[in-house]
Image (cartoon, rainbow, N blue to C red; front, side, top):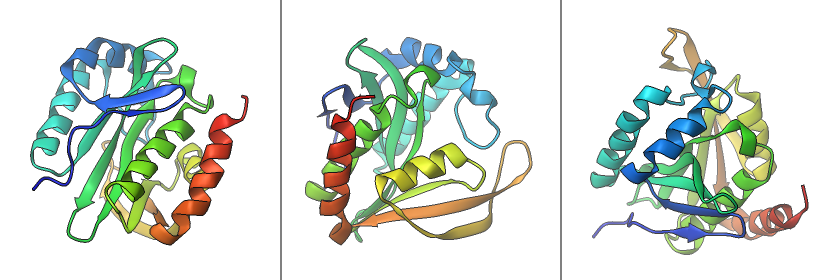
Length: 197
């Protein structure tokens, strides 16, 4: 039986839907807001590669290796980014929230916090995860700060973990939230999600 099933998660200002080709035009536009693909320490597709990235993620979903979401900003009704459940270990009830990117204009608005609250609630309360991981490049200070604001703890750094597209070696910071921490993390995120920006 499939552990990861198509689901729509909805919060105050955001809706997470299963990634779909119908989101293509909005997502191409979203990558152009801030030229996100030019950031060397993260992986956002170039505008002409968004369609291939949608298909790649959907292929991984078909293999139960990923559950990819489109991030829909409810105020505009537009797709503003992607996020996923990935590195899925159904046997040990663990997964990673990652491959997340959001258009520049919604960064820092609280939208990402709302997304993480929805994803973590689903992971811990419906999938009964024992741990949820987050991974990011050592030099992606914005991502690391955001992960730490969620309440995740640094498990360690995988040195020379991957070869980046530009040929440099990536040190990967691995964070996690475990099930026993979830009630406190949830209270914190619910408070953050309701604060005016």
